[in-house]
Amino acid sequence: MAPPTGPAGGLEAALSRRLRARDRSPRLAAFSKLGEHGAVWLVLGGAMSACAAPGRRRAWRRATGRVALAYGLNTALKLIVRRPRPADGLSSTLTRLSFPSAHAATSFAGARGFARAGAPAPVLYALAASLALSRLRLGVHHPSDVLAGALLGHLVAGGGR
Image 1 (cartoon, one colour):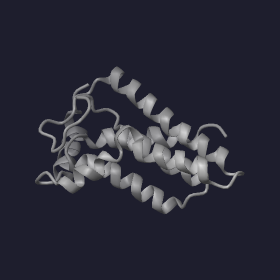
Image 2 (cartoon, helix red, strand yellow):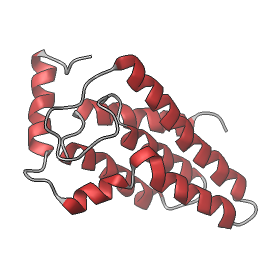
Image 3 (tube, rainbow, N blue to C red):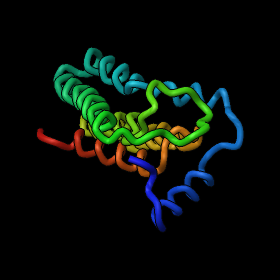
Image 4 (cartoon, rainbow, N blue to C red):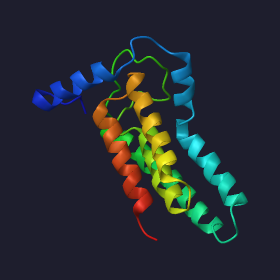
């Protein structure tokens, strides 16, 4: 799937240019690495699954499982859609496939699921948004990749009880 063309594609390209950092920032790249494979969310969820009050552990395990599910579904969608990443990103990536953003999917699954498990939602969503935005700043995703990933994660974390 190629980047969209027409008015929507032009808007996305303009937004990408505005959000992209001018130069590679080692700190931004290091921060963004926290989100690879949902790592920061899986580690946090695993730790809370073990350390939370006994009555909350099941909620943390369920939320952490939703992060893993979001990652798996995201990977499957990437293989189906096969949209290439933007050219000349400022960071290396594990694949050349862009849609949807796994950082956004796992981050928003983590934010929603962990908030339901009892963690402070504003902090979680700030981290989720920052990790998702880092992918745009590094120029390795189109804005619609990040929006689709965020929606996927939000929906996966909200499914079921």
